[in-house]
Length: 113
Image (cartoon, rainbow, N blue to C red; front, side, top):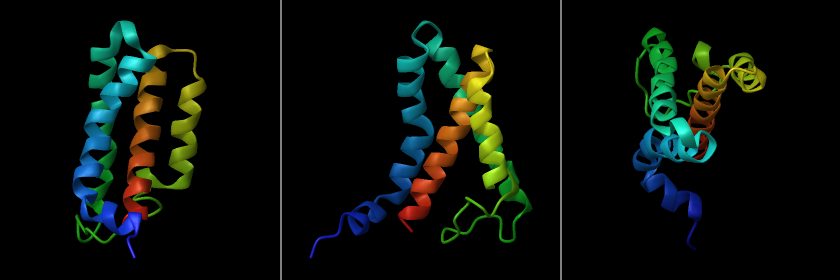
């Protein structure tokens, strides 16, 4: 019997990096139309949140879920990222959107493992 999760898990890497790089471009265009290129760049720079992976041993483990494991991927950090969405500064909101979507992407990755 065909299982959608099995099918998607075959394309996990493609889905993961598409969500990290291409979808923020779409979000930028939809949410910040006048400054979408700058917003996309800022959202891409939120990838630096993955620097917390350097503190793990091993640094990269394809079978490890980042959410809840790395210190910048904890539920407490996600709450802070979510709260950034409510600060009335467009650049902080853009950072918040980038970080929240980054956590969503990593969560989807965990589901596909």
